[in-house]
Length: 236
Image (tube, rainbow, N blue to C red; front, top):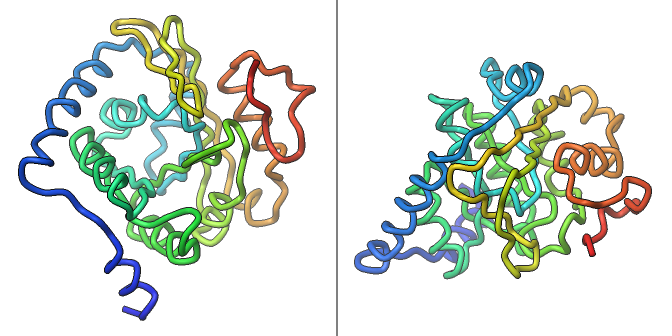
């Protein structure tokens, strides 16, 4: 273990005892809520999301995160999804919540000590786990496709799956990402496509092209012609 890794671990906050118990009811509610949803997938999307011969790097917009745990429970049973979570105190609460809904947290930061965070995610993939990447997270701007996730995919030589969703009926929070909460028992259309590791390694897929594809998979009222090179603008 190098000095940088030790420094990261020394900065990782955690919650225990009664604080962790406070999170448990929220996690149970979220699991029951997500279990009530009715997913619809095309044969192509189903084939992509059930590919289990190699670890996958899931890329999805931050406001679709509510679906992640249930997607793995239904379609990737037996595999583990790892997600980067801040080492801060706020991140400790999120990590505890993720544990309940079936997501393993990799504690780091996409902004502070980013090099170590990339190393941890690559190590998770080399260990046989899937990883989840929100290219506009953790603080936005919404639909701004940042390049950190692609660095992880290139170094891990990973197959990327672009994950999108369309909601029959959903609430949207007033958060920076206008987070989607699908109404219980509503239908959600899941749209997925695979990007082979060769395309990522050779940079055949640019951030702009991936942002466009992710927008098409998660239609949100953003005209394709308005997507700038830096990412996708906030919907009005």
